[in-house]
Length: 232
Image (cartoon, rainbow, N blue to C red; front, top):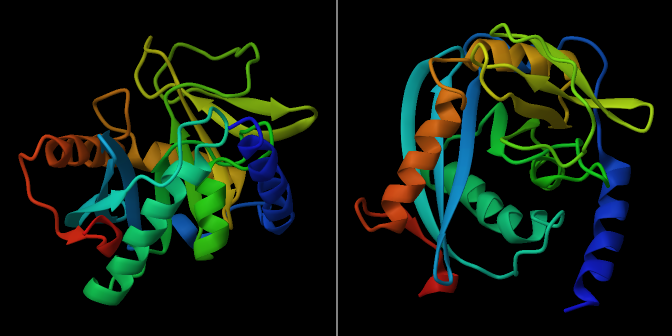
């Protein structure tokens, strides 16, 4: 097991050369863009991947859940290898079975606000060649945050001398959430997306809905729309 992170680190360092973070506002978060938000829950050796689809800013499209085999152990900072393959599998199913090709994906995890600048949102964004954003409850980069208590407040997250994300106060006086671009989206558009999606809870509503659906599927309260053949 000690050799696995070393091999994984080499892969992430190589993939990081492909990261594209544009400068300035983009059309990625334009009204009408199809946003796919992903969250995963685990039960035994199965990963239940939920996806919530909306057209920005908040027009509901559909929800789906898939079941995949867990193919990698949990290793801190290398979550891409555990969560990336099921999300990529769900994206493929959406495209091939439902004819749905997201303009943007949002993942419960990190983008480039990661020690190797390769969180799961970056990993998926590069391999799927789709704009991607990570949104996490806790930061991987430990640093002091000078963040106002008011709802909507933002402060930058840094890796060395480069801004790689934002801390975002989704509710006044509540612990912030942490967003970072993963691939093919700018810091400016990432911050804009946070404001567009913000709702009545600490967690952004699309992530909250995907989380709830994934939990229901893991508890067998809802049936899966897709079961990977690897699980058969």
